[in-house]
Length: 512
Ligand code: XMP
Image (tube, protein in one colour):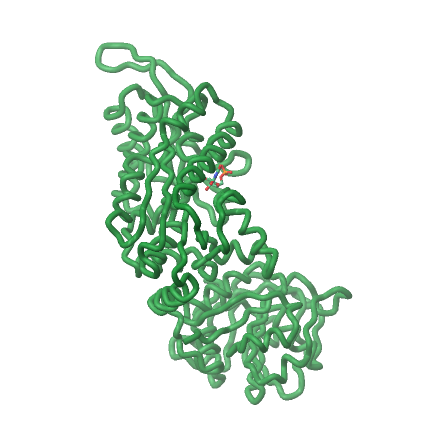
């Protein structure tokens, strides 16, 4: 059975993905499509509801995005948000004009509690909503009534219940809007009649069934990195097709302490062909004498492909190559053929050399947090499911300069202590990425009665939403104190620990 679908029509607003995620939080499956998608295409998908997003334009701009007015009479309930609200008003004959006082930020909003959108008990008659607009609806279209207002905005929400058309000037999807999720939920459940059938339990069942049907007697190959996406993908495939599925885990030796064994432990003994390639010696040899970060990356990337290639050739013909593409990758690379072409050449850098018929991407509908939920549903251990982002080249780009066995050991031990203490302090899910770096610097210290001349370990912890910009994490001094004391005491050849307090930009998150 297919899930009920709600479509989000994207008008270019910054919260588009957030709206989609919130709808899914309400247990309703939701996809984003561009506003230019023809109405016939939209209707072919049989949505039970449509949401118009916000957008940067003014509806009266010459090049402002518009919509086929037929959408308003196709019988599918619509919720317009911000620009989407104004577009609905404008298209149906209302008036949209520039605000005398623009509203931006938290705004006291008075709701009409008799309207279905605002009927939920927990929503008070007056509450904060998040506004961000420079135009307002001065006149609602015929048949509509105003169902919310603020001091400066006479139409904070409007509705035409007969036609199942609703619109809100504010952003119910952002956390700043009190009970915003409740308002969305009312639209989904009470107006669209959604039953809330989007759960990871259902998703897992459906995905397993679909993979089985597609794969038939064929064979599937997956490059397992140990990251969240490829691990969940592997777990799903193993449940779906068991031994017809082979995972190749190329361990380049630059994973964190014990991580290679943890990945193996999670999959070994499962109903799956699991191949671990211990390639550390080869990688170390190829990296001998190399200290330039980009050269390190290039050498590791190439050798990774070669190692995978050597192993996969032993398997003979493979019918499907699986990869852990997730929904944000699909949205970012555009929908339709473009995404397929991109993903084909983007299997963690594994392009044309493996002979396979088709790619399967069992996670391409899921957001990252849903991938994690699915991992839990499939019984994967917490340390894999909650794994923080980790660069493909691993610790090789966290050892500044040339890589040696000794340095790798030092870094693995220091990083282990840091992660252990962060976890003990209950910060492991708060800080978005945290790790140790082995600097290439030695300095003078004193230990016992003797002078030392040893390495400096740098600790890095960042808070970020998109990894494009980041702030350093304000880790409590008490935690840093314990980490520092433990590292200098427990890790040989380290006599100094520093904490990196730079933001990105100008620094990057990684040191190389
Ligand atoms: P930077 O250092 O560019 O890092 O601020 C941003 C995010 O990207 C990760 N990163 C990498 N991931 N291969 C990867 O797979 C790489 O070569 C690489 N370099 C950086 C980094 O860990 C952070 O999450």
